[in-house]
Length: 286
Image (cartoon, rainbow, N blue to C red; front, side, top):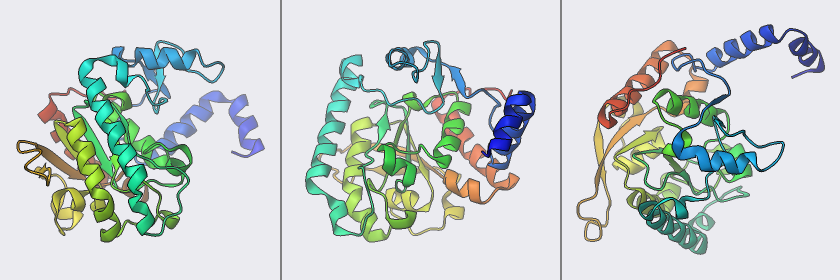
């Protein structure tokens, strides 16, 4: 924002709010409710919000939570089930860091972006690879596409703390390049074990690379999205009964590039199918 724009916003906050709403609409978020930057906190998030509030001036006050809140670090102590699942996830990450499959291909990463969220989440989102903001913070989906995904999650009646978010690749490709099939194959075993640790009731794959690696297909995104499929762990001896419904849909970054009512309606239609399967009511548009 330029200094002139900043002064204008301070002088006329109502105009600034309207401009923010118009910008959000331009970015493709008009199919989810209008809501403030901070939204009511859920009971499950209260501990994390309180911890953030104690952190000083930059913390979030108890009673409200940022749309992309700080990651929770207390899953080991929430309950036995989550503690066990988080322990599995920690072990998978340690194995990944030891094996370093990304060393086999060109990468421009600063941090490993493993994944975050409820280790026993009912819903898991899988993208393709970290971008610049994700690489800088070590967290998945925190850039512009992440902001849009957060709004989608909120519209479904959930929050980031109640889902699990990961990518196929755990390190950023140079210039945010689309993962190659070789890169995806090298990282897939760790993703598969992540899924097995979380055991979500539904997986939403975001974009073509994630959908193809999970569904083991070469079909186009237009043919896959909006149709239920299923994923099973390749190690059928270790996970004989692990089969999870999968809903492929467009990546939020695609929506930001291809801003059309048709594309937004398609994604929201896909998410409503997921909501129906999980029994979610969603939030009414404001």
